[in-house]
Image (cartoon, rainbow, N blue to C red; front, side, top):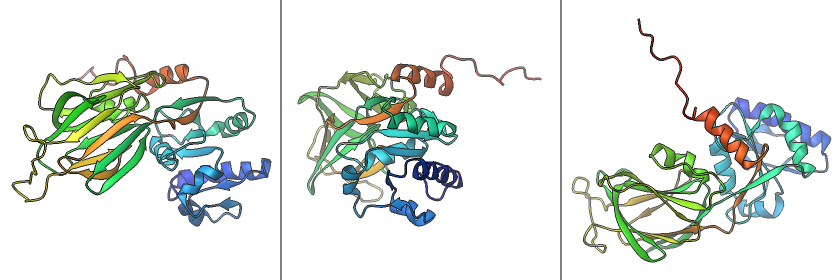
Length: 305
């Protein structure tokens, strides 16, 4: 939840009071910012975010899709189930309305809830400074950032060269992320249980470069390069700065890549389990109709006088 949001604070007070009174044997852990803002005696925190996985059996989020992405990022390895409540925000990861928080929470504790394991991507960034590994629930995005020049990114599938993406950037998306940035960039929609990975260029120079879906058992390698010379060091002619490609995981910048740096992407062995309303198929179809207004006529237009 967002500690400075009045709506989130009010919902959290209702939920946490319900849990502390009806299920007094349960410990309620929150991030330090939330504990400092609310100052409730029954709230607990941990000293290091790495300790979350050893203490937490259930994650509850209050807010929008971004809140869920933040919660998932705290668990880079094995993640407990996420029970997410919407606070009036439209989102594809928000199966429960907050007014049903008592029944939803009780169904989870009584093992009557349905859980969908949402695929994550393991993204390994290899640069001259070393390597880091991040898990992506929605997508990995490589983009030109503040640079006026297009990115050149060489794409390999299982070490077989595919193409050079010359574009504003490149999105590597999970089925869960197919309704996020990928959708805005013209990519396909995938049901969350489809075992596939989306490769979607952002405004490519070549109109023949279209999004594609590959099986989830492949390993992708993305190498930052320059057309015709992958080892060439390039500077912006106006600013004189070294040209970089920014790398974002679920909307958060994690690295700036130089020519020659690379990212390997494969399915993670640590999915994110999410509690669903009924089942994944019903929830997904409802979301398409209610949020995207799938194949519906937009009302309120026409009849101009």
